Structure formats: C-alpha cells, structure tokens
Amino acid sequence: MTLHFRRSDTIIRTYRADSLVGLKKEMKRRRGALGMVTTSYPWSWNTSIDWFDFGANLGVDLTLAITLKLPSWSPGWLCPWGEQKEWRRFLHALTHHEQGHIEIHKKEARVMYRRLCKATSSTVEAVYESERSRIRKLNKAYDKKTYGTGTPYGPIAIRLENARQ
Ligand SMILES: [Zn+2]
Image (cartoon, rainbow, N blue to C red; front, side):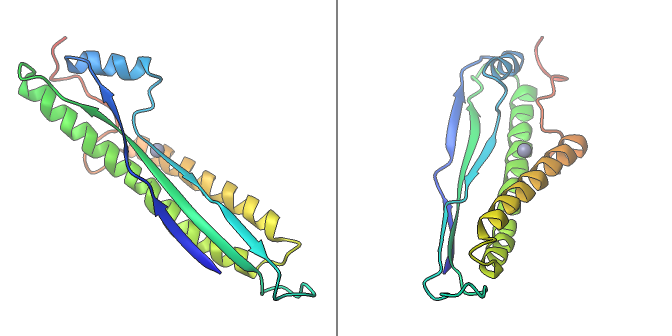
C-alpha cells in the first residue's frame, strides 16, 4: 500500500514572435494554452488480506503523475527593455500559478489516498471517482480565484502597456 508522486520533465513550448504584441497573437492562435499542469492518478487495489470485505484492509496503490507545460520566448536584442521585463513578469506569474495547481494536487492526493484506504472493495471505485471530481473542482476554483486576483507577480496575462504597437 503506497502513495507515489511522479514529476515528469517540464515540457517547454517555444514561441517565435519578434515582439510582445506578436507573441500575444501567436499565443492566441496556438489556442492560448500558455501553461498547463496535467495530472493522472493511476491506481490499483486488492483485497487479498480482506477476504470478507469488512473494510479498512484494502491494499491501495496510488500514483500522482504530474507534467508541467510552460512557454518559452527569447526576445531579440532589438526588443525594448519594457517588453523583455513584461515577458519575465508574465512568466513568473504563470509559473507561480501552475505551481499552485501542483501544490493542490499533491495535498489532495494525500487526502484521496487516505480515503481510498478507508474504503471497502464495494465502495473504492466510487470513492476514487468522487475524489477525482473533488480535486478537479478545487483546481477550477483556484483558476477562477487567481485569474481574478492575479499572483504576487501580477496578472496571468501579458500586458501591452509598454509594448511597441
Ligand atoms: Zn490554472
């Protein structure tokens, strides 16, 4: 009976625009998936110990597998300082936001694991499904909240105040 965390490498998505305005357009064109945390919860359980299904003896293995996707952009040497600075700010805000998703998943995977271990062989599948949807909702609420209030680095969007138009 174990709980594992598996973090795969960060996937970097490279953008080629030569200005901040162009970058914003390119991100929109490429369907706007700026950064992303994808997770899966492979699991298994067995009742080898618990012959009569009195519960509490399920052998549960749960893995939380996390992949982080982030954008990459290299402002050319002609790119004004204000645009370079805004890009860096945006990347910090985005990374901070995605890290928040990872923390939620890590914390809630522990809760999920405890609940799975307490389940019986007749309830364990339902517990798994309800935990998945509970964690999904927490992440949605987190998105709603942080897109509204931003991060310590500001909003999770590229601001064009200092950009060449
Ligand atoms: Zn998010």
